[in-house]
Every structure is written in C-alpha cells, then in structure tokens.
Amino acid sequence: MDATGSQQQEKPAAERPADALKTFAATTSRLVKQAASILEEEIAAGIGAARQVEAKLLDVPKLRSGKPEEVMQRFRRDAHELVDIMLDVLQGAASALGSLAERAVKIRTEATPGGQMEPGKTATVELQQPVKAGERVEIPLTLANDSDSPTPEFTFFATDFVSQGGERIPADCAVFTPASLVIPPRSAEKVLLTLAVPEKTAPGTYSGLIQANKLGQLRAVIILRIE
Image (cartoon, rainbow, N blue to C red; front, top):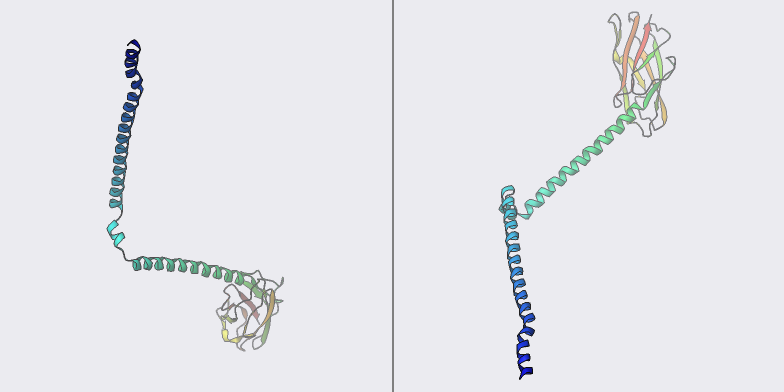
C-alpha cells in the first residue's frame, strides 16, 4: 500500500515538465503570429506610401496605357538627336583640321629680304627696284605647305593697287600663273604674279592685297614704287 501510494503521489510531479512545455509552445506560437501580423501591417503601409508618392510624381495610368509605337518613336527621336550631335562634333573637328592646314601654308619670295613669311600672318612683299609706268613686273612667289594634308584647289585674286595719293592700278592688271593649284603635303609650289602697269600711272608707292579664295590665311600685301 505504501509503495503504490508513493507512485501515485509522484505521477503529477512527472507530468509537470510536459505541461510547462505545452504552455511555452502555445505562448511562442502566439508571439510569432502577433509579430507576423505586425510585419504584414508595416509592409502594407510601406506599399501604400510608395503608391501615394508614385501617384503624385507620375501619371501612372498614362504611362501604362502608352502605345509601344510611341515609345519607339521617342527612342528614334532621341537617337537621331544623338547622331546629329556626333555629326556636329565630327564636322567641327574637320573644320579645325582645315583651319590648321590653312595656317600651315606660307609664302616665300626673293623680293623681300628674309625671304619667308610666317604662316597665318599677312605677308608683306615689297619690291626693291622701282617700276616705270607702262612696264610689266614679275613677282615670283613660293607657297610652302608644312602640313600633313594637301590643300584644296585654290586660286589667287588681287585688289586694286592704291597709292598714297589715291591713284589706282586696276586689279585686272594682275595675272597669276598658274590660275589655280593644289599644294601636296610637305611640299612647295611656285606662283608667278605678273603686274602690267598702265602707261599713264602716276608716280608713287602703290600697295594692294592678294589672297587665296579657299585659304583665308594665305594672303600678302604687295608694295611697289612707280617712277
């Protein structure tokens, strides 16, 4: 009787850990469910806030209802603008190279002491010997191309030659031989300027400008004295 009673009294003590475990599990499950519920509410609130911001900044229905061809048209327009910009850059680079080529062409002549003019500057060619009215004077010019590219084909033209008193030698009295030319890279070509002075030209010092039509930097002032 004592042994049996002792076992019956110890049985509730053996069941206490199981009851405690069940209580712990139930409490933990409840906490997890509460945490999940709170997390869902926070996520839902974040999504709602994002939609409100999106609605304020963007016309979402219009964007989503846009036609695919309109999107492609916008892409083509932007692509064309990009191509235009690239072409402008290339054209600017080509113009810069052409300008450099112009500045690399210079005039050399035996008529002026020193014999060489700096590229890109207006040369001055002054004849050392006077010329008589009615005579023809020949002025040889050497054109040197110091660049790595050929010049475009160009011709020279002249202005009237004007004295300090206002008298003139007409521009059509000046003839250039050859009439047009191209200077290869790192080369030089000769041009002969022939000036036919009219017989009734008044004495004095005359000056006129000669210039190439496609090389704006290639120009020179010709100075001569008429007796």
